[in-house]
Amino acid sequence: MKVRRLEVLRIVLRNDTGEFLVALSTKATGIVSPLLGEILAAREAAVFAQQQQFPLLELEGDALLVINAISHKGGNDSSPFGHILDDTRRILDNQAQWLAMLGLKQHSLVTWFKESSDVILNLLVEDSN
Image (cartoon, rainbow, N blue to C red; front, side, top):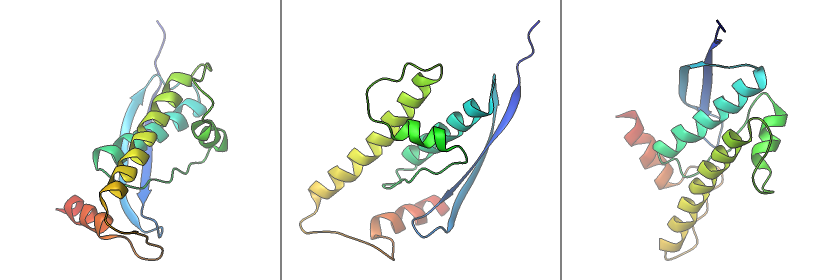
């Protein structure tokens, strides 16, 4: 009988100024390598951000290889974990499309640098309730 490894994925999300937003912790079975654990943690962060409708997401992680693989836009990934990387890319692209659609609805240029936009602040307020 093959024993399936049980791991805990730990994820911390921060806003654009580095302030803590939320921490996630979830169990995952079948983690056969640290690389797969990092890939699944990145995917979970993207899924959570999508569910919470965070309009901006900058993905960071401990494994530069994973971040580079997710950032690569060269078609489908045929690596052993490529399907998970492709799905993570799709989720993140949907977030970018949401932000673009938001921009199309604006009547003037909207930018923010040091302070969060009203959209982000409203999402944070909704999330804290």
